[in-house]
Image (tube, rainbow, N blue to C red; front, side, top):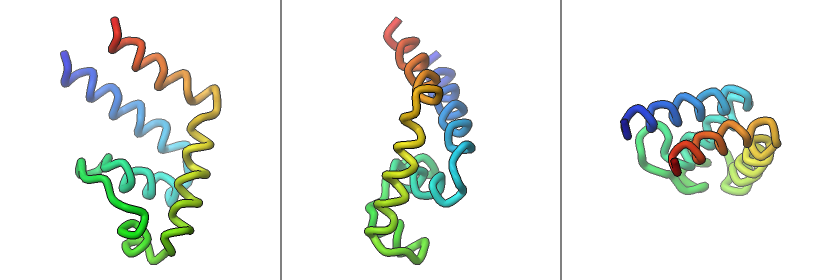
Length: 85
């Protein structure tokens, strides 16, 4: 059951990331280790994407703001509440 819940979260996160630009999604995937379970620093991501650390931070901030919009937050909140029950 734990694996099923993890898979559901992964699918939900992918749907949320699909609503971002490809660059925003790539930054968040790397930053939070969603591709290989190894979170990367802003500097590491910047080096890979040929961007400054500051530019990566700006992209990350903009992407997180988009994901915090109420219509998107409810999907993640529903998942978390399901874990508690």
